[in-house]
Length: 121
Image 1: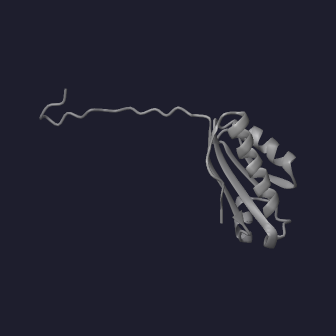
Image 2: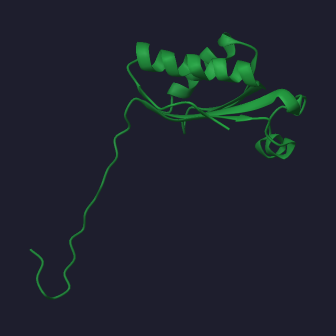
Image 3: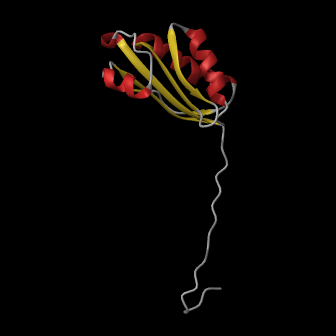
């Protein structure tokens, strides 16, 4: 019990990873410097290109998502991290959007994940 002698209560919070995709965004026509800073494929036509980025838990889900992405169309797998759950793909805007939509649909409908809305800019 706390009293008037400046005793503090310590609260420990713990997070439990759920099955969810928490972030899914497409950057249409990003500046070349973004590709360079991320170490992505420099042989792209920047005028019609896009970068798609997702984050998911459990983080190993990025392996499944990367497989779906590369099988769904003509996209380049820029980065897939099974430790953080981050996935980055590049390609034509329509191809990136199609791949990301397919990932969200599969994870939501087949695997029972909670999925976020796909955003674009």
